Length: 314
Length: 314
Image (cartoon, rainbow over all chains, first blue to last red; front, side, top):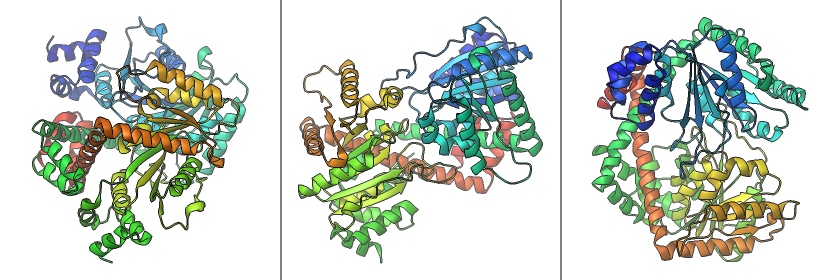
């Protein structure tokens, strides 16, 4: 199928066309540029919600419950589940992902897992382009689910309109270790597994930490903390209300446009850097970088001078 | 003090000159290029050992104990402690770093903390240049200590000749979450706090995991697992023996030269990309990237075409 036909079908809601287009993204296909150019006029309507949290907090279950809730509200949904994988083995870290089979046969729900291979942090380098496909395919909401390891929360916040940080009781260490990052990126906090011991304590601790860092300006967004039992759908309606509230706040303050512009700039820059890196890569082939590396190891030249030579010939 | 004088004094072992040069690196000083050029002929002698592990395993205590051991063997030592910090707040995540005061007055030990600001992962972008300073200053060994969060282990492995992964008993979750990365980057594994319950179980579990992934080729390196109580110096001699063994193995197999060349190539590439990014940044100023981002958000152009325009004008 050629790209215009694919794009046409994806826009009419054909899930196989959507899947094919995301595969073009994942594979870095030579057709990717043509596809992105064809999709561009239809992008910008989807609302992007990022979900992150440590392993075990119930991200997939929460995503599943959110899909159910949004479907009940008549929304078309995309889900992008980004798996962290070892840059060495290429193997997925988590084998126990809930398959979200509840929604497997719903034509208004697109679910896609992507590997984050070769990219530091939890988000795939291809994520922004995959989001464009789901956006152009008419999704009202796209949920981007990623495992919160180290700095990937930050990436989620940058990729999303609204960032949801999930916690669960009894993961105190996780909160401690991650709190510096978590506090500043969460637009909405969810304490899942709220039927377990310690849920109130976790919510209280979080509330305390948020209060310490609170911005005092009038009109500033105060991230809500919502308790859920995602496996039973409890509290999920409240989460969706909070997401809608944040979306409205972003719109009223003009921050939505700002976030999206910053995101587009970052995406352009990342592609530009990749283009240039590929040119350097080609120089590997003709052994210029290799020769420069040898010269640096031998102490004949410093790495800055070597970089200048590389750039000059790029 | 001018750069040639600084370099001259650093090479004679003046700790203040070493500190000044590392500050030039950290600050991205305009004098940095001149300094790197002047240092280049004196680099390549230090052996770089990376230490990583989750918060709480005793990295700083272990580093301290290793310094004591190497000093007893008459080696000159550099320590580079890289703090992960929030890209938003700029604040350090860990406030409890052991100050390694045991060695504060030893003229043969250089200790330096660096922030990892603005850089995803645990290692500062400036680390390779700081390593060059310590190398040229005549350090026999440089220990690079970094907190293992997510993918930063991988960076440590790439920056070091030998990568040491530290674990401690009772951090099972940490092992589970990180095992995919840990197993493949550790050249030497250390189970610290071995006087605590569960040390044997941790070592056994690790051994089991390593056996599963073991390479069967003859002559392949089999990462040893060493139990230590770093606070009392127990097992540290063994760790140093293991490091020496790995170093010898790298040398005999030609892998040391390979690792160092790959590192130099990565360093050159990173600087080249930074140079080009700065050019893009200048375009921020004249608002070209800003206009391109607006056009992408409006769907008038796709990000690949925008990137092409950016690169064309870089």
